[in-house]
Length: 266
Image (tube, rainbow, N blue to C red; front, side, top):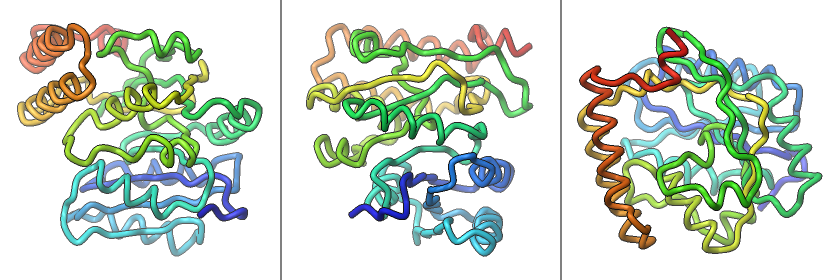
């Protein structure tokens, strides 16, 4: 149930993020929009992440910390946060990403002015672990453009989205059986339920791509997840698209190919 004293609930799941979570939390505290709560789900961290969150929590009563006794994964942690949320609008952020100061204000205003939109993303500044940033990433803005995107094209920068509570009530939560690409499956499912999407062109988050280099384990998990989504939603030519993505991921891992945005960083 929503709480009228909270307009936006921000959900952040973290696991061993001691190197970056403080900067993320500062970016939330510096928001020009003040009617928010932050729900941090610590997914079994063994470093100093909880200590940093507790420092912020003691200084700001809008911050809540929930600790998982064991690592349950991103989707399950996000679902836990969504169930605890008091706001009618639910925003995402990841511990290694940063919100620009007017992010929540601009998104909340857009959602108020466009009651038909269920999920709103934003543009992003791409960064890597070294802190280099590229030119802004701008995604399609209208629902019609987003709904027409091929399967593997990005609809939203996941940590930039703001979602109505009613979307989850209609569509359901993240699929906890997927170890990766949970957001992509949710957006596809949402389209089938008649959800409406939009993106703001303005970069409102700094998104850490880590240079798009993934571990072999993550490449495998993403491949398995995407193959499952293809079967679940009967995606046309989905298998070939997934194969292409795997080849790109492997080439990037082996430094045989560099994504365009990373080239711009350099």
